[in-house]
Length: 534
Image 1 (cartoon, helix red, strand yellow):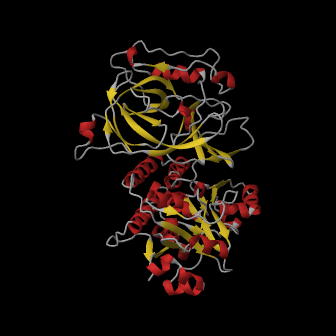
Image 2 (tube, rainbow, N blue to C red; image 1 turned 180 degrees about the vertical axis):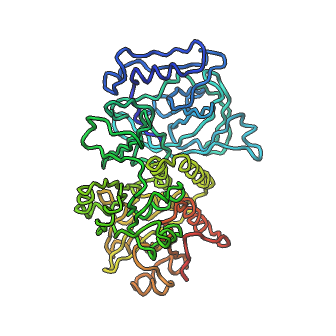
Image 3 (cartoon, rainbow, N blue to C red; image 1 turned 90 degrees about the vertical axis):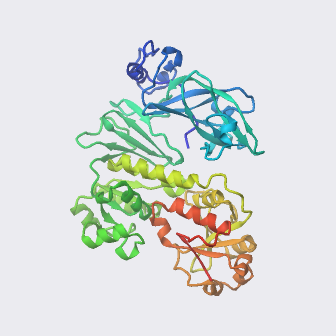
C-alpha cells in the first residue's frame, strides 16, 4: 500500500529533469534556482504541474506523480486525509491513479457506465485495504482503487457499487498532476547522488527503497537499519552517513540464514547468488536448496546462532541475510560485521498484510539485480489473491496455534499476516490475551488463557512448524485432555499446517485459498498446505 504521508515540494533539479523530459509543446516546468538538495528549503519550492491543456495530445513520461481526483458527488471522494489527491503511475504511456476513499462502503468501481458494469464478463475494479493517517495522528482503514485514466483534465465515466448492491453512474476527472513530492524526510539525502524515485509499494510497510542516479539504491528497513546498494564498478559516496550499511554489488556469495527468504531468491532467478545456507539439506521442505546443497553449488555454513566464520571468510562471503532470530544473538551479528561481512536483517514476518510479506521479493530483486523477475512474480501473486476479494463472511472463528514442550502455547498477534489471511478468506481470527509489545509476530501464552479463548472456536489450525507434526487427532488430545471438550475437536474441524508453508514463495496465495476452502466447506477441493487431522 502506498505511504500516505506525502511531503510537499520537490528539489529544483528534479523539477527541471521532469520538465525537459515531457514530450509535449508548451509544457510548464518550473525549475528552482537553488538546486536539488533534498533539504527543507527545497521542500517549499514550486512543484511541476502538468495539465491536458498544455497540449491536445499531452503524454506524461513514465514515472510516479500525484494528482487531484475530482468527482460529481459529495458522497464519493478521496479521504480527507489525502487532501483530494492520489498517486498517478504512468507506465508505457498508460495512466493509473490510486486513490484512498473515505470508507469501505464502496465495494467495486467500473471504468464506464453502470449498465455495462452489470453485464456478464464486466471487469470490475477491486479494492485494496489502505490505512490513511490524519493530521492529528489518528488512522483509519479504508478502501482504495487503481483507476485507469484515459486523459487528464477531461471527465470520464466511472460507475460504483456499494454495500446495498446498487450501481450508480458518476463523472470523474484527474487534474493538477505534479511530480511525486519528495523532501529530505521522504528521500534520504545521499551526498553526491541525485534522487530519482521511490519504489511504489503496494502492501509492504516495513521498508522503503529509494533510487538515485547511477543505479544506486537505498533500502530503509523502518526502525532497524538503512543499506546503500552500490552498483558494480561504483564506489560509495564520500561523507555517507555513518548509520548506512554499504552493500557492494555483485552480491553473489550470500550467506542466507533467513530460511523463509530462500524461495524468494529462487523465484527471482537469483538462487545462484546464495553460496551459503544456515539450514542443512534435511531441514529443507523445498527442492531447490536441497539440490544445490547436494551438487555443491551451495554449502551449509552453520546455523544462524553458530555460523562457520572460517568458511564464510575463506570463500569471500559478501552478505549475511538473517531473520529476526539474529536479534537474540547480537554477538553473532557483531562478529560477522567485525569480519567485514555486512548483515542484513529480514523483517518480512512483521508485515501486517500477507502480500506485504511476499512483496519483500522486490527488495531482494534490487539486491541481486533481478528486479524484472521479482516484479513479474509479485504481480502474479497479487492476481491470485484478487480471486478472494469480496468473499462472503463464513462467520467461523479460527484459532491458529502451536504448543511448546513445556505446555505453553504459541499464537500469532492479531496484527500478524496469518490472521489477515484468515480474514481475507472469510474467517475471524481468535486472538489470545493482549498483543505484546515488540517486534515478534508471535507470542507465548499460558495454558489457561489459551483454553479460555479457544474452546468454542469453529476451526483449529495446528502450526507444525514450531514442534513436530501431529500424526492424528488422538495425538492432539494426548497432549492435553482438555482438547476433548473443544467445539472444533468434537466437530472434526482440526487442521495442521506443515513446514513447507514458510519455505514456499507462493504460500500466501496458496494458504489463503486453503483457509477459504476450509471455512466455506469446500471439502472436494484438495488442500495445498493444510492437512485435516482425523
